[in-house]
Image (tube, rainbow, N blue to C red; front, top):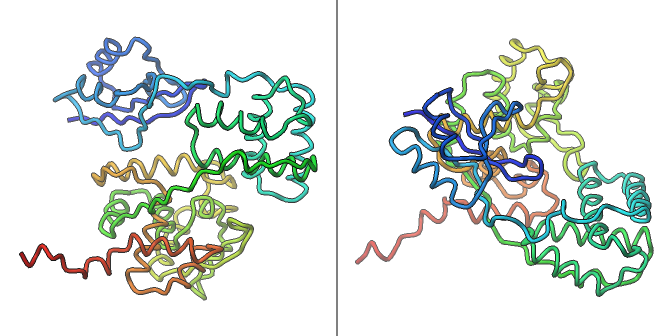
Length: 372
């Protein structure tokens, strides 16, 4: 049977499901009969419909015995709509725009990363839009509580977003405005103690073996074999490979830190073969145009196709390869201190989380059930 792959994204502030499949007139007719809001996306070259609760089951019913429904990356909508979306908030007034400009200037002058600047400014922008009719100099503790209850909690926004808003508000009012009030009244949620997602060595091998393109194989192999973040991989340049010392030099990584990662002989040979075929000029892995960085979305699509080809049903992401590398190092007996250095963790507590997913010691425990 044919495959129908479902993924979701945001289009014009609406949560939609992208429907990928080889051209099939019967499938298109079924979709048009079943989804009145079905549309064609010229950008994604596929059909799409609104994401609603229960959409996965609906697809399974429509295409029963006709196609496999692959939905490992699909996150179904939990409710028809939010109570108050960002798009429903008023626009910024002139005073708020002035405050945002001052805040942005401060963040850039103190050399915060581009991602942090964008995250903080967007969070503060939402906060200002919520209090559109009030000058930010008049905002007090009561307003903070109101924003937390009426916007963050009612919209069921994530814990990470809540923390981002708290950080942005604290920084703006304490540094830029020198305003004394208690931002802790927007209570910080307790962080969920989730474990990192890990693949077995067999699953990693199956994913890599499902690829045929040399560049794709090398990119995913390097993420796994060196425990790289996706951004670190894409910023690599040819001169960052030190084949004489068998190390990879990572410049200005997360936290503005440089570090090195060990390169195995197998990885070095793979990189040499890649060099002979592609001859990169500026970046180690370039996009379609010479000298441009490879697009992260393209790499995500490469992984998604590889996971499907390997018949793995887990919602694998690029970061899973980094987690898997660290866990496999630990299981092979590598000291946690070395793993911390290789991964570039500032705190050993971050690295220690891999001890909770390593199965080496757990598998040695004999269950009392075996003695019954």
